[in-house]
Every structure is written in C-alpha cells, then in structure tokens.
Amino acid sequence: MNNDARNAQIIVSDEVDALYIKVADQIGEGEVAHSESFALSARASEVVFDLSADGRLLGIEIIGIEGLLKNMERS
Image (cartoon, rainbow, N blue to C red):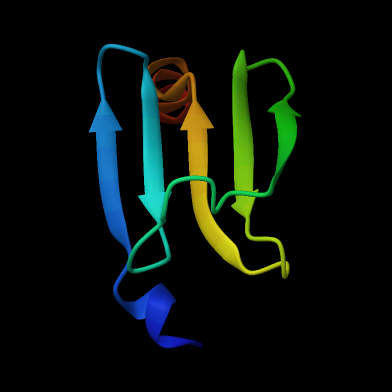
C-alpha cells in the first residue's frame, strides 16, 4: 500500500449527493487526466475513479450516495 492510500481523505457533499475519497495527498488543477465511470445496477449510483496521466489513482467519487446507503440499510 502506498503512502497516499494511508492518508486518504473523505469529503461528503450533500449538495450533489456524492462522496469523494481523495487518495492523493494533493490533486493539482488539471492533474486528473482520465476518469473511469461505472454504474451500480439498480441503485441509481455511480463510481468514478480519477486517474493521473501515468495511471496513478488520485481519487474515487461515489455519486448517489444517499440512495446507495438507504439500499444497504435495507439489506
């Protein structure tokens, strides 16, 4: 495990119903070169992985977190 992962920061935004796990210590403007997005079936949620130009994971965003958590509570 790299040092970035041990220092991860979690940011919650109620305004956009999202949670962001910031893995990199700092993410400079324009550093996210590519994002991979995956829809979570039947949950109206999406997971987005932000990657640097050299493929390093910078952060993970979960969109639709409120609905996802409600569905997890019912399970």
